[in-house]
Image 1 (cartoon, helix red, strand yellow):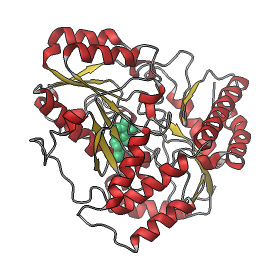
Image 2 (tube, protein in one colour; image 1 turned 30 degrees about the horizontal axis):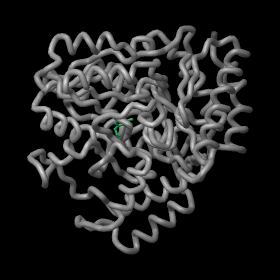
Image 3 (tube, rainbow, N blue to C red; image 1 turned 90 degrees about the vertical axis):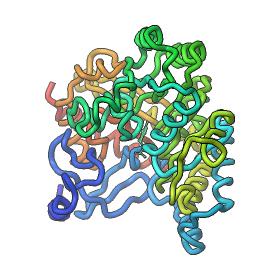
Length: 429
Ligand SMILES: *Cc1c(COP(=O)(O)O)cnc(C)c1O
C-alpha cells in the first residue's frame, strides 16, 4: 500500500503539533506505524492522499451515522453558511434541533447546547454539585467523560491506549472528590455510598461503555445505579455522548428503560460538526445561568451550522427503518468477525449494541476495565494492520469501540466480510 504522501504530510504536521496530531489516538501510537492522511470521505469510505480507500468503521468516532458527506447534510450546511456561520445571538434553529432531541430523549425537559462532549461533562458536574450542594462524584474505571480535570481519574481508552496511569497536570486535590467504582459491579458502588453517601453529588456513567472497548451493562446494573442514587438523594448522570442515537434512537435510557436525572450528549447530535449538549430534569436545569447561580456559557454554542448539521442528520437517521437497517449491518459485521476468528482458531469476544460494536482478542468474557487488561493487544495490533492494508479501517487501538453508518450496508459490508479471513489468518496464535 502506498503511503509516500501521507508520510510526507505527517512529517510536516509533527513540526506543528505535538505528536503530529490534534487528538492523541490519531497518532497510531498504540498499534504502531504512522497514520494515513485523509483527503476526503464519501459514504462509508475514507480516501487518503496516496489514493488508498478504506471502509471506515470509526466514522469520526461516532458522529457520522449517515456516513461521510451525506448529500442532505452537505446541502443543509451550505445553505446555512450562506446565511451566516455564527450569530452569538438567539435564533430559531436552536429550538428546532432541541425539539428533535427531546422527541427522542424525553428526559431532557430542558437542555443546553455546548461545543463538545468535554464541555457537556464539565458543565454537568458543576450543575450536579450546585444542585445537591455536595462535592463527591462517583465514576467508573475505564469510562471517559471528556478531558476535564475532575473526570480524568481512570479515564478509559485515550489514557489507556497511551498506558498513562493518571494524568500529569491534574493536582491530586482536584480529583480527591472523584471516587472510582468498577463498572458492572454494584457492590463497589454501594461500598462508596456506605462510606460517604450523603456527600455524593452524582454517579456518572457511560451506560454502555465505549471507551474501554465495548462493555455491555449486565442485567440490573443500570437499574441498581438508579435505585442507589435515589436512596441517597444523589443524581444519576448518563454520559450518552457516544451511546446517544447509537445504541437506540433514544439512547441507552430508552434501550434499558432507566431514566437518569441528567444526560450528556455529543458526537451524533452535531452530525459531524462540533456540538455537545446536557440536559435533564427541569428543576435542576433551572439552576443554570441566567435563571440560577450555576454559571455556564459559550461564544459559539448553538452554532447555526452545527444546529442544521445535527437536525438534518437526526431527521434522516430517525426515518422509519434506517436505524434498524444499520443495526442489522452491525450484527452481520459482528457475526462475520466471530465466524472468521473461530475458523482461524482465535478466541474472540465480539458484541454490538445498536450500531456500536467492539471486539477483544480474549478467551474470557470482558465485562469491566480489569477484564480488558488481560486481552491480547498484540493480536489486535497485527489484525488491525492486516485489515488496514486490505482497505478496512478499524479504530487504531484495542480499547476503542467501532461504529457503523447507514451507508455501510451492501458493498462496504461485503468488502469487509471478504477481507476478514485474510486479516485473522495473519494473526499469530
Ligand atoms: C467522546 C466522548 C466524550 C468527549 O467528547 P468530546 O466531544 O471529544 O469532547 C465524553 N464522553 C463520552 C462517553 C465520549 O465517548
